[in-house]
Amino acid sequence: MIRSTSLQGFDALVAELGADPAPLMLEAGLRPDLAADREAYLPYRSLAHLVENAARELRCPDFGLRLARYQGIEILGAVAMIARHAPTAADAMVGLTRYTQFYSTAFEVDLQPLDDGRARYTFTIVAPRVPERVQVLELSLGVSLDLFRILLGEDFRPRRALLPHPAVAAPGVYHAFFDCPVSFDAEVCGFDIDQAQLGRPRHGDDPEVRRLAERYLETTAVPLGADLHTHVRRLVERLLPTGQATIGTVARHLGLHPRTLQRRLRDEATTFEVVLDEVRRDLAEQYVRYSERPLPRIATMLGYTEQSTLSRACRRWFGVPPQRLRRPGR
Image 1 (cartoon, one colour):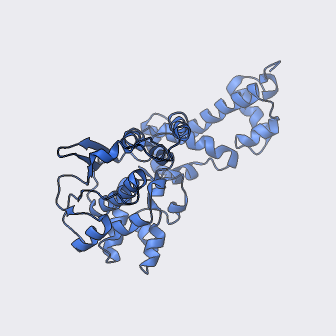
Image 2 (cartoon, rainbow, N blue to C red):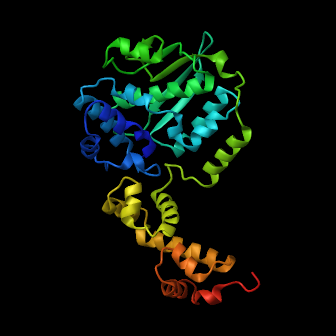
Image 3 (cartoon, one colour):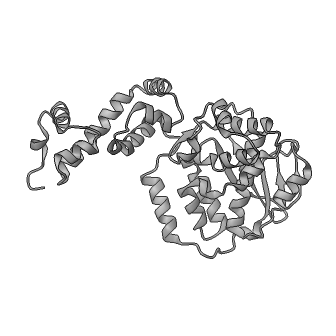
């Protein structure tokens, strides 16, 4: 999976090229409004197919590079804050390597020293069964270029850009985009960089902002490599107060059909209804025992339309009505 922020700019670019993005999204099995839902996910293979098919249908061989101009490292969310506020570019790469799983587990980034004062940044797709890679690799390397220009300054130029496939656009397009020599059919996808640049202190970094972002990811966010049960539980917690904690809404956030979601939950020995009930039970105990909130308010926060529904649920869960569950002297 990958977060839906990876679609940023797709609608605008397709419209700029004189086409309607909705049919392309539907052909890739994605709902047309997915890009606007920043909390949603989509399968990485769907993203790869979407940009490849758009390049083919719109006769735009540099579609991935063009889309990269609409994106920046902000699509990484809190992970971008960790990179932005690292004391050096090398520290930023350590943070990215550690926390990229909160954006997607479909790829890995790495930075290793080479000879002649060089270091090599690599972007590697590790998700299985992603046959359409050209456009999504060029998109990702284009976004990576923005990352290094933020870390090392707008005048950053790689020593060389490396692409593991032949040129699909005119070679001059690549040279103009990366502003450096480009090697095609390379062994990896990435950049060669002057290693001395990576250890220079950066200006404007804020250690406290970085710590807050790390704390958020480690204690609040769910890595995309987590089991499905964990993702569903976290989404149910967010959606309960809105009254939208349904299997359809959760499945849509996860880029799955409701039947697919239910089948995968059964593979993990649970169901959506069980997860929903678990979350309500845990929150009810927390809210009733340890807070001063009125019971009608708690019922609403748990997604119930009536307090009587909360009372019946508390009897089922705890054997007593919510009034008796309140801790004396809380």
